Image (cartoon, rainbow, N blue to C red; front, side, top):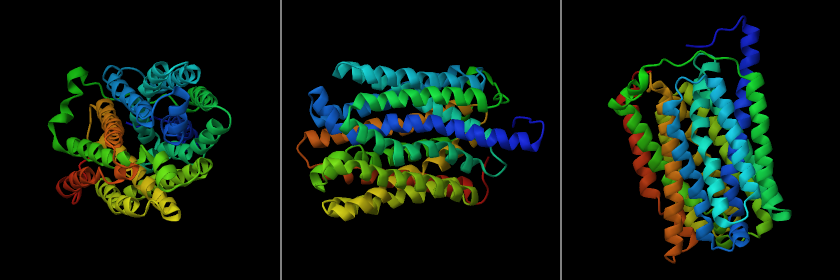
Length: 399
């Protein structure tokens, strides 16, 4: 059910400001998650560890996501607005701890804490965005929420990378903490009190798991994410060691990466309002395969690496809004659990990808190998999404 507003004008005002408030949170989360890729070398130096050991900071964050998202199972009775405020508060505290962390393991723990609200925020945020959307525009509304993260990669992450290199990485995490506090205030002011989700009891939340479509989405997400994220987790050394870009170029290269994410997310969201989300997600993931193959062979050429970086990040983010909107429709009565599961799938993929990349690099293979090691997994992921499309969405969407 959608919230009841006194008039259309009120609905539009709340909708616009509400989606903006949601996007503020994904902006903070975007910097927190992705700035590590641009400062991995600096963090390794600051903590006195190798790049592969610093790569475990990425795994720590993703592991926090996987632990935090299932907590939504116990949050079904909490009002959606209050739950979003709680998650924004954890974003604030977690990144403040990261900013003052004195050692490797303290920072590792802070990254884990910072990851705890990530999956839950995106999961609940997708539900809230759909409730605030106009009929037939659910995927676009989710894309607007996710756009905060893509703006973070377009502007926030490059700025954070620059600040980290020029001043201190601690300032970057202070900025994220402040962004979390502003998100808390925006949600409190601009998100209306929404009608709650249907409460079928604790066991009733698992009913949707007896059907195949959610599992096809989860499988498509985790395989595709591992495959692409193996490459992107170690984009810093690929650009500096393979393409021979100077460290000072990472800021504008992260702008290119952010532009790819921004464009891929919004274009895919709009396409999913016209076509089936599963088909859009499958084609976007499949498009990553030739991009990463080309990166492997031509990533040592600077202009080619820059172009392929933009295309690769577009594929990385392009499947997000279609599939995060789609999963809610397949999880009636268990929307919280479904939203949590897809975030677990995304971030388990991130954690596994970072671990695979670390193992490959640690075994003595070149940084460029991370761009192709996950190709079979991408193929498996988009194949599952094509199965979903042909069996469940091609003739009639089962929502």
